[in-house]
Length: 356
Ligand SMILES: Cc1ncc(COP(=O)(O)O)c(C=O)c1O
Image (cartoon, rainbow, N blue to C red; front, side, top):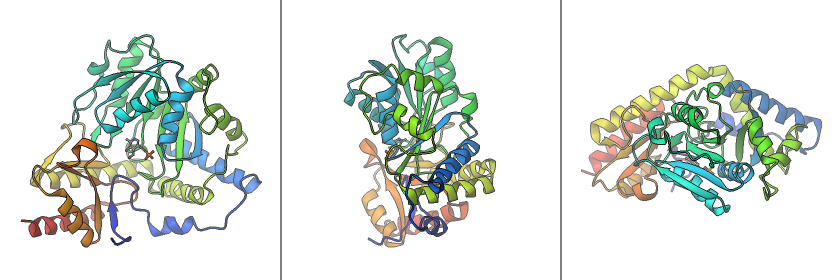
């Protein structure tokens, strides 16, 4: 397989040459003033880009590191996990793997989780509730704000949000949300290589962590915060990736977040229109992901489609988990444009013609 395929994947996504170049600056030691300036600058720019006052922490990991950290530092015994796909299931499993008692609220795959699905269902004993903002296996953008509002009207658990495939592409209106954690990574809508996980944390989560035992070390929010308060990392950080992060954040600020969100919406619309004409969308109308189109293909040989597409220099993502054989996923996020998406769709049409 060529390593230079254009990636319309669910992540890692296409990283543009200018970004890769920005990452190739000389290495530095992560204890000096230059490093502190880099970390401080990234955190300040993240506050602007995300429009949040929450505390922001970085660790060298994929996003799952901080998903685990939330349940490990924020839950003593019981949590509730909302799921309408593989990644919803996964956060519940992460809780169980860490010895927590997990109650699941399941919604059929392809449907969005609505406020009405959680109303009266959160137990007063639930210390935390986990929500996936954009369910990457099904291409559903859950109405997180609505869900949070319904939970908060009845109970007062910590609320953890997985923003892995929505942060940077969708305006989550974090300030209006009253959540305790928002987790994401570099390899999705930030259009960077994988390797850095980001957590926006509330004061409440930090206070709760003080009362939770066995938080571990590497992902202990309190240890990470102690270092972050001095603009330092807890362990050796991926400095090159952080050069890239700073560069991408500047790019986002220059583009303007409203423009960035509008560009993602336009790419999503282009991709959905194409998919609706040729196949079916897996996700429910009204809750379609702005970053991932999950195309339900019926009997089409998706393995062959993948092969033919790669032979022409493009790559999409296969269906995820139990949707592997009857869907494929088009990722349209990061620095890609509508023109890029049109290039892909044109090539997909050529492939479909060949496969007739
Ligand atoms: C919604 C969602 N959550 C969590 C993950 C896991 O993220 P990571 O692989 O960065 O740990 C993914 C990965 O695709 C995802 O799409």
